[in-house]
Image (cartoon, rainbow, N blue to C red; front, side, top):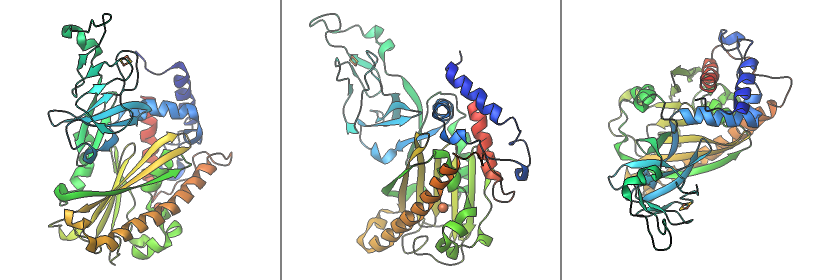
Length: 390
Ligand code: FES
Ligand SMILES: [Fe+2]
């Protein structure tokens, strides 16, 4: 049964019409990015939520927030309320965050509980999502004891997996296996020992721009000499590799020759790091919006969380190596990493919001791409197109 509403089907048709110039079938130099309305239109945004974000593995939360049995956090993916919970069996599970009775959202704040209890009529569910009580269900003091029939009212589970500190969900249940999606990243992480990676803190930024512009900017080293000249002093354009892609993964990187206090500086490094990784930085995106960069002394997660067609919340989460990295003696080194991110990201936000403004112009509808730097941008546009069309 088709899931899309008639309005969404119409947006899908309009979108494919806009691409009828074959922009994504041409060589990069003759191609263009996505049309403007993919970045501005509320109907397109709704379609995108219902296809791209519903049908892929999407970052949903942090393992470090779900340490104890009963820890639960409400999140939103594909504009749907979801709850992540640490169940009795030590597994992190995801459920649709909605009561089976009259549809009240079950969990509205992070917390810890032995069970889910709906505040509306106190139906309750265990941490595996099974219905366990329906008070007064058959009338006053006539509580439900007919467990056999309860399966209809259990919570709806969502496909859920953890990878390092990160929880991913796939709402439709139809995505390729997570292992297959993440594999192009895993092979490139060979030599990095993640076992002693520690979350330090998250930085939050609000953007008046579409989430895709933030992801596209993240994997674009071409803008560095112009937007971040101070960063270009650390690694020049001649050392920056053009981004590449492998299925749902986009990646780029560099070998750096100088030292930088905010990268591979005074903080502890990954143990036993192979020599070629000791002066290396790499960026990864797993479609649609899970991204991180890695250096010898840190992993920086970057999530562009859509909040509306022209509104995005960015979370940048910093991870350092070893509990010792939290020591006072590294306070200055950590502060430098944070300052670096704040400076860098404010410069990026300025340029991303300008690109959003440009999407209101009749003088632009996807642009002209660089055959050297922008094949990855075309690939991202093609992935979007495929995800919207399927
Ligand atoms: S809506 Fe949840 S118990 Fe009635
Ligand atoms: Fe940038």
